[in-house]
Length: 399
Ligand SMILES: Nc1ncnc2c1ncn2[C@@H]1O[C@H](COP(=O)(O)OP(=O)(O)OP(=O)(O)O)[C@@H](O)[C@H]1O
Ligand SMILES: [Mg+2]
Image (cartoon, rainbow, N blue to C red):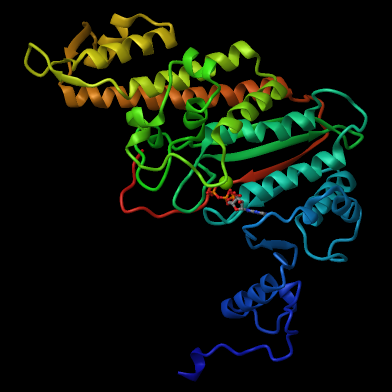
């Protein structure tokens, strides 16, 4: 049994080592002990060769990320200064310039580990290095940075593990011209969690944008026909409506502001929030048995009213919308056959519509951001930053 005991590195300094390749024994307990020693001294970053390990500090550490810090890491030899994500971004940028090749930074870890925050800091550093100083207005780098709050409003939600959990994967491609300046960018997103739109359980929330809209200024609440989040089925399946330290009303205004910067016009923003509101009302439409066997109809006056509002917000025909929920069209070689749906199936088609509309809305926003930032067809090289979701394991998996 002695063989299963891990040897201790007796010569390791009490404060830990900043590069774990310096450890005499590179086994899991040794690595964890080293990270814990450093964390205790507020050192959240540690290298293992040229890989950076970040431990979430769960508190703001502004001094770590200010411009002064960026200046220090600019051009510094890798490993000369304390481990930091700016060192990773800097060596990446220099490798791109010196070797004329594209680079990628991969950020991975479990949910809540700090991937998204890290990705944003990496992008800030690259914007600092490749930005055009002195240019006014909406620069590419500003647009790239402001695309984060927009995507987070529609693609992030409070989960058990993380109050701002990304429910999609993201690859940001920053393009550089021959002078090493940012000349374009593209954002690619992967697999938005659609099921959350219709199904949320305690203590989680639906996507942030729904609560933002419900907390919008009174004129917008009226215009988009929303109100208390407790009155919407898609939000009241859980008793969690607020997130600690998040003011949804302020987030609404900030999201709109970020949308302005990434080039989404006021009319387009209104259209986006109309769709968000329509989804909430769609969720309040209920069905009961219809006259024919296995058919359904709107359950009551309330459902009729919500359907009216959805049709109005989506600018579509009320009757066609109702048919699309209560009927199914089967395409056959001999033509289309329309079949009524029972109340349970109608409910499913309601939820399917909500999920599809929401994920199309998300894709549309991503497309819009990409078109407005613009791609540089003559880009010499790119730096890609991948923020891939955290791992979670559920008892039941849903789509
Ligand atoms: N470097 C940091 N400094 C301060 N706080 C941080 C830092 N990194 C993470 N956090 C805190 O941890 C929270 C979770 O981090 P983040 O959203 O980046 O996790 P994630 O890895 O992207 O998780 P998910 O996979 O769920 O999206 C942040 O909202 C923030 O409060
Ligand atoms: Mg994230």
